[in-house]
Length: 148
Image (cartoon, rainbow, N blue to C red; front, side, top):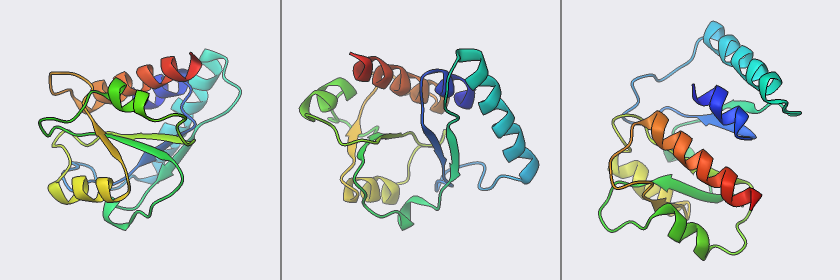
C-alpha cells in the first residue's frame, strides 16, 4: 500500500530499515521483486516518469548525518505539529526525509539517534496513527506543501 500510494504522491525513494520494534527484520528476494513490480505498476498508473528507489537501510543506530532535512513521528508529549516545524525551516534542505516507526513505535535509543541526526520530531495528529496512516499523511502533507 505504501509503495503504491507513495509512488503516486511523488516519493523519490523508500528507505526500509529494521527498527528495534519491527516485526519484520529482513526481506527475501521474491518479496523485493514483488515490491519492484508494485513500484512499476504505480508509476505507470499515475503517469510518473521516474521509478522510486527501494533502499534497504541498516538499523538507525548506524546512520550518519547527511544534508537532508529529516522529520520523524515522535509520540512524546509537547512535540510540535508537523506544519509548525515545516514552517520554521526556510528553505528546507533537499532531500526531505520523513521517517515513521513500526507499529510498536521507535525505541528510546532510536528517538535519541534521530535527534542526534538533527531530525525534527513532529506530531501528525492528536491520535496515535498506524504506521501506514502516518506515512500516507506525512506524504500527503509534504506533497501539498512542496507543490505550493
